[in-house]
Image (cartoon, rainbow over all chains, first blue to last red; front, side, top):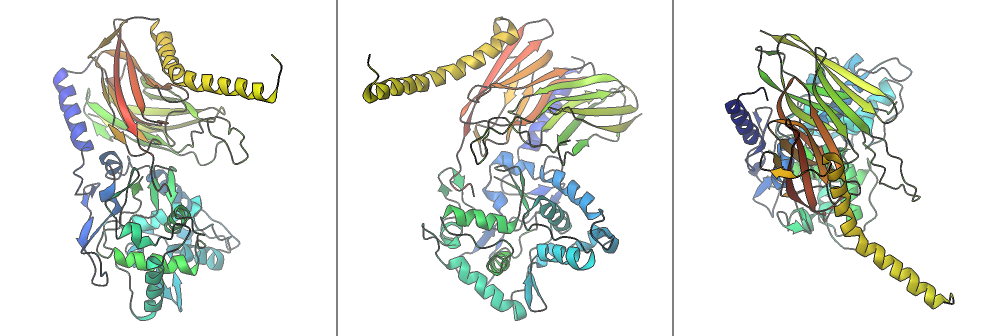
Length: 276
Length: 109
Length: 140
């Protein structure tokens, strides 16, 4: 042993301090995140909204506080490579037009949004560029390439408050999303609200129910050790209540995504977050 | 070659001679345990990283034997002493015979 | 004995019961066997090795584990409830600053994680920690 004992004590002390995360305040790479906010006016049944991070165990919480410890960053690295990779008939990469990925700061907070009368999610924007500008094949909505790039783009907004538009053109989509949120479906006859509004904070068997916020997506889940898309997660919830899931990238999930994004107004974007 | 394998390492850029530094490493790898079955009930063959080594200027820091119980995207954190300026070499050995490596320089004053 | 359908059922269910009863102790002894193989049956001291593991793991897929054994040459980790008990072995080289390491491991069920350290004088140290692994209600 070539280390003085007192150094060992100091090092061990530091290590345990770093690991013990105060369960109420999240700081990622030294930047404070908002994980709790007053519910936006349109939410009738809740006073306070909480990031899903608040519902996880201390060990899982700690993984998100450091970009090296956060396993999602191996996929962000893959996203950086993909962003620079030429693909398709036009000989272009994402970075041919979007020279600095940092310019996407703020985009995550505003999506989904209405463009030419249609509600578009980040995946639509990525595939729009791929098919129209690059002459490349679209990526699968929840595939590894798509989630790597949406994690990279979303990361540029980390720490910024969620802020989607729900009025004007967006209003009918938002109403549709709200309708879906409160509609019971499936053999278990449950709506999103039954778990994530009426019973958040309770245990469902050994799982701690969150409010179902989407401010950290795509998210790295310990369960499957990969990045998970928002629509992929919706699909998982629907399967659990024995319902036939809507299509990823379909109108229903996009409307639900808009409504859920609006329920997170004021929470920091945590992309890419770490969840159970 | 297993697809999408990407190493990440975190080493301070500078240190004082004899300092203890903390090193973190992560590599993207499925670590298929050999215990799982596919949809048809067939065992998915084991495919893991079975060894990881960290060396500094040719001297060993740590040599790890990995079994299938190591999580997907294997992560290690450990401490090294740096006697002089030089280069860390990190090497991961895959069951399929592939070897992945990466290196990091450190300036010691 | 004549091989009738009833006899066959009795035989096979006895076989299943024996296998089921045998499985738990078998796992424990697998770990003991693995430890014996490592130590050559030497006595195991306690107290010089610190094993840090969560009391309850939120997900058995990724359980953070830390071991620290000042004066160790190598530390081996076992998980006594996994199908294969061996988890990892850390051998410390001349430039290692402390005999400690952290990693993330898979635990199939609630079980003991055991760390065995081989010390510089050739003796062995043991530490173990029970980790409860929860089964999610809503794996999604």
